Structures are given as C-alpha cells and as structure tokens.
Length: 461
Image (cartoon, rainbow, N blue to C red; front, side, top):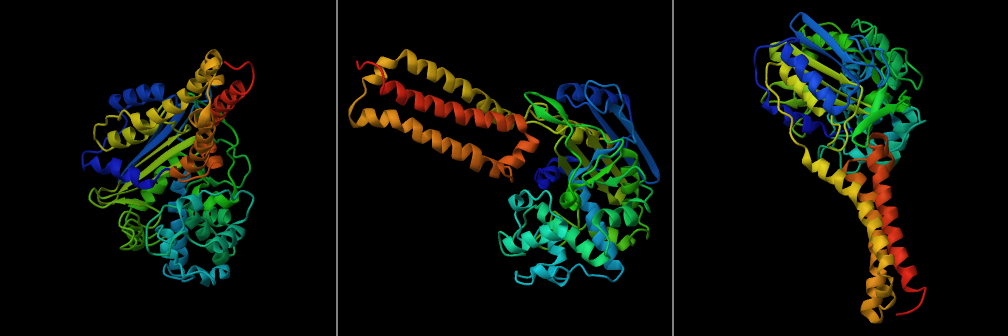
C-alpha cells in the first residue's frame, strides 16, 4: 500500500489535451520500459466518452508463453476501495444508511469508542493509522476485524487528521455485510460487478481464480513469481477485487457517463469531490487532484500494481494493470503506470532517476559486505584487539555490540514503520530488501561478537 497522495502529486503535471489511443510511440514506450523494469505483462484501457479501447502486452507468468490479453485478470489492489465506496453509496440511496451515520449504529462494538462516521471512514479521516490498516488480520471475518479495530481504537481523535488506512475500508466492508445481510463478495458481485457487465471480475475469497495472471515480486534487481496471492476475506473491501482491462474500461465508463444507473449521476459526482474540509484530496474511494480535475487511485498488492484515473469533465479515463510490483528503485514499474497514463492523455512522460530509493537499497546491500570485510580485518589485526586495555579499550571493544543492537532496532523495527507497515508486511512486498535487512543485522552482530572473542582469547600482545 503506497501513499495515494504520491500518485496525486505525480499526476499534477497532466493537462487537458487530445486523447490518444494505441500508437507507435506508446508501443515503443511499453516495450522499452517493460524490458527495463522486468515486468512480465500488462494490460491497459482508455475511455473517451462512449469509446472504449483496451490492449495488452507480455505474458501471464515469466518464462511461460501464455499471453496477457484485455480479459486477463489482475489484482487491482486499493482501486477496490472505489467499489467499496460505491457499495456504501448504493445502500445510502436505498435508504439503508446515510454517509454521516455513526459506525456504532451499524456495528455496536464501536459504541464505547469516540463517534466515527461512515464519511470519515470513506475519506480516511477516522483517526486510524496506516500502520493499523496494514496490521496482520488474515483469517478473521470482517465482523471480527471490526471488533479488533474497535478494541484497539484509532491512533488519533476522529476528524482531526488525514491518514490513509486499509482499516477504514475493512470496517466499511463489515458495515456492508451488517446492513445488506450479504457477505461483502456476494454484495459487490451481485450489485456492482454483474450489473455493470463486468463478467471477468471477481472478489477474492481465498481460493484460486481461473485466468488470474501470476504476480511477480521484486528480487535482487529483477522479479520472480509469487503464487500465494489468492487474497483473504478480511482484506477484500480494501484490496480484494480482481479484474481485467476490458472490465475496468466498463467500470470507468460507468463512472463517467453522467447517468443514473448503479447509483445516481449526482452520487457519482459526489464521489469525486472532496469528502470534507479535512479531506481536500480524497473523495469517496477516490484520490483527487482538484486543480487538474482528476480522480484516481493506485493499487499495490504483492506482485501487482495498478492505476485507474478519471477525468470527469472530459469523460475520459485510463486504467493500467501490471503483474509485477516495483522494487526499491530497481525493477520499478511506476514508469509504466504513469507513463502509459500520461501518453493516453496526450502528454509526454519522462521517468525520474529514483536514486533516493536506489541509494537506500544499495546501502543495505553493501552493509553486510562491509561487516564481513571488517570481520576478516579483525582477525588479521587480532594482536591489536588483544592489546586493548583500560576504559578506552573496553569501550572500543563493547561499543560495536551496543551499536549492533541499535542497528537491529532501527532496521527491523523503525524502518518498516516508515513504510507504514510491519516487518512482516514489508516482507510481502519487498522480500529481497527484508532479507538484506536481516543480513545487515546478522553480519554486524558477527563482527561485534568476533572482535570480543578475539580480544579475550589467544595470547596477549
């Protein structure tokens, strides 16, 4: 789960221009960046009024020949939140709830908490944090997850700040089940996906889905397949829908048509406006660029990245689906996501160098090698270690061990939280990076302990 406002800032550069469909320039761009990113395959679709165009490139799994087509299924990640928001709006129009209802009126376990409204959940102003939303919850039902979150309580007072959190949409999923009497997958499939003609699409229930492309996670400057991606019911409302480029084109078209169908045209317009004063860049399930007139959402799940964008004033939309997730600056797929989006809207695109993330990755890659070299050096210079004495000598021998412990806390405890997740959560998305973090901690400990062992064994100088 990447901070959605990053996507908003990246797309601020987009401007209204002639809408283009597939072209030699776009084909060349895709071929070039697929090669550099290592992404096995992708599919995309453009919507311009009543015109829907979808296409695809690459394969469903690296090393195999099955091609990606416009009907190949991909996990769409957090783009699912727009469907969950649409379900809440449907129930509101049916008179079964209002957007300003307190959560406790539908989930009584929240009665002991400070009042939180459905609108605050929809717009990420409930007070629940990104880390809370990414906490381990597999195996729970949505009602059990709701009870867990009610027990934990929000990280800050509701309505006092904005924080992107999957917890908000998991609670909304529990509300949908409580109000409709259906499971979340059944409600979304029967009231949104099938009526919209999205017959390729499904909500993951923890079981294999035929036609789903294999996801690919970053691994040492490239990608490798990741097969354990059948989803979990508790994560369904925040990121559990699988869809195709052809189906997503239908969905974007429905959101852009200005007609009353699954919901009213007025409700569609409300979904892509700021939800409140505290949420100027997020509506109901959509991130917003008010100046550019865009609504969008990115999606990230282990092995997949997605972007869906609406330009309501021009009735234009773009979706890009990739069966690979980006690495720490190497093997990144963001140029494909944002480049295809820009080119679809008639804008040029130049990928940034991304050396911030790359520098961090290279640092973590090199640190174990430095510690191993230092360990060899400690043995070569063992007489000097054995000669250390006095307070200064004791300090120089024991200080590296203390710093090794500090390094473990920083790399394995604090650093994952900077990404808005836990170490286990980070390992799902960046397994190679987490492996390198462990290597840093282990080799630093080996170096520190080895110095002590050498200093206190063998002949004294």
